[in-house]
Image (cartoon, rainbow, N blue to C red):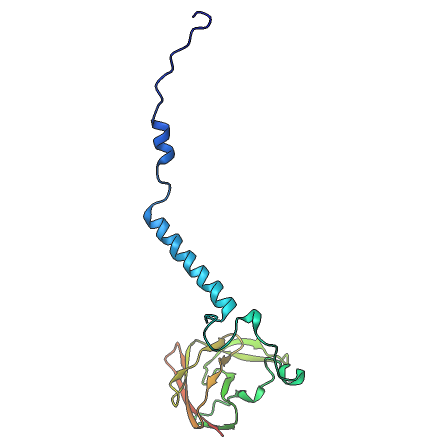
Length: 197
């Protein structure tokens, strides 16, 4: 190779450029990204504007709302301060039925697993005394027939206790049917009448 001689260049290889220009995202990925972005933007819009456009009547965006016009004593309510709307009720598992009167809008029923057969195990109670544990609990169904509300039942098989979520009550008499089933086939149905004044 002589000094000052220009070396011939290899023709430019187009292969690397094709790799660089290859689309990195498919149409489906771009579509999914757009949908997720729209959902996110909608959530941000809802958060700051309470779902209304600025020219619509009604509430202002949260950041621009007027301060509460109530006095501090009126506006400082504890979340559970309205106890009159919720009432607990301890059932006695009376097979002939039970009656209860209340002003509350909802009731929580709790008590022992009604009609439970007893096995030989012993369970210590809260008082420290030893008492027999219920055997073979299968399920409990509690329904307010007046409102057609099926309650969620939480049970403690070891302690032999149950509790429900809050059951909505209508004005007047509410017929609540309770049914406890056991693995040996035994059933214990009874009825609770709750009169909401």
